[in-house]
Image (tube, rainbow, N blue to C red; front, top):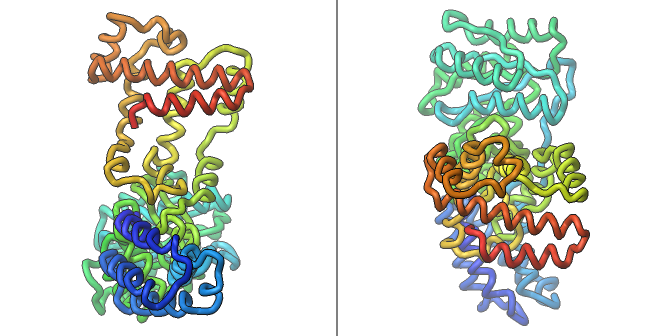
Length: 451
C-alpha cells in the first residue's frame, strides 16, 4: 500500500533535507511536487488543498526557520500533517455495554463486508478474548449466508442461521436473543450490500439500526476505489450514525487515496485496515504508523507486534537450545523458519515495515517474490524424513528425485541446499556466542543469496 506515494514523497522531500534555511521560494517546488503526489494517489482535492496550506504555514513558521535542520523539520511537519489527516490516533472499538455488544456492518456489495465480519470476529476472539457470534441479515444473496457460515466454522465463531424468507430485522433480533442465552460478548451483524447507494437500501438498514441499536456501526469500504470510497462513506454517514470505518483490500492499493481522504470527508475514524484475503489479515489502523510508512520511515512497532503474534516462542526456544548444544540446523528447522515468515505475510510485508525501504529502488522491490517461500517449502516437503534430518545425504539421484517430486528444477534444489548451508554457518557462529562473527557471516551470506 502507498507504494507510488512513498516513492514520490521520498524523492521530493530528500531534496530539502540539506537546506540551511527554508523560505517560501525554496519550498514552493517541493510543495508543488507533494501536491501532485497526493493528487496522483487519488486523494480528494479538498483534502490536498488543506494539507498543502497547513504544511506551508507550518514550514514558514518561526520554529522551522530557527531549527538546526530545517529540511528534517519540514519532513517532520509533513508527517504530522499526514497523521492529522488520518485521525491522530487509533480509536478502539467501544464494547462497553451490557453483553452482547452489537456491531452492525454496512457497505456496498463487493467491498469485502462478509469476509470482514469473520476477520473482525477472529480479531476480537484472539486479541480481546471475546466470545463472538455472527449472523447474516443479507436476505437477497443466499451465497452470502453460506459464505459467512463457512468462515465462522473456519474461525471458530458462533454462527446464527438465517433464511432468505425472513426479514432482516427478525434475523438480527433472533440472533441477539440467542446470543444472550449463550452468554456471548459480541454479536456482529452482516447486512445486505448494493452495487450503489439507493433509497431502498438505506431505508432497510435504518430500520435494522433502530431495531437492534448497535453500539458500533462500521462502514466497510474498498480502499481501491480511491476518493470514491470517501464519497460513498459520506453518503452512508448522512443516513446512519456511523462510529467508524474499515478499509479493505489495502494490500492491493498502491495509491492510498481512500486512507488519506475518508477521515477528512466523513469525520469518522478509520478503526481497522484489511491487508489480505486471509481471516487473520485485519489490523487496527494506527495513523502515526501509516504516516511513517508513507514517508519510507518504516513501521517497526507493527513489525514487532507481528513477530510477537506469529512466532512460536516454544519452537524458537527449542531451536536455540538445540543449536547451543551443537546439534545443528536441519531442514525441519529451516521449514519452520519459512512457515513463520509466510505467517507474517511474507518477505515483502516484512520489508515494507522496515525503515529506509523508501530509498530502495523499484527494480529491487520487484525482485522480492513471496511465492519463493512456497516453492522452498515444497522442496523440503519432497524430501524424506531422513533427508530432512541429515541434509548431507542429499546428493546425485536424491536431488533429481526431490526436484521431480515437487515439480521444480534441479537448480532450485541446489539453491535450497546452498541457502541451508549458509544458515547452518550462521547458526554455528550463534552457538559459539560470537555475535561479531555472526554479523560478518550474515553480511557475506546476503551477497550470495538470491533476493
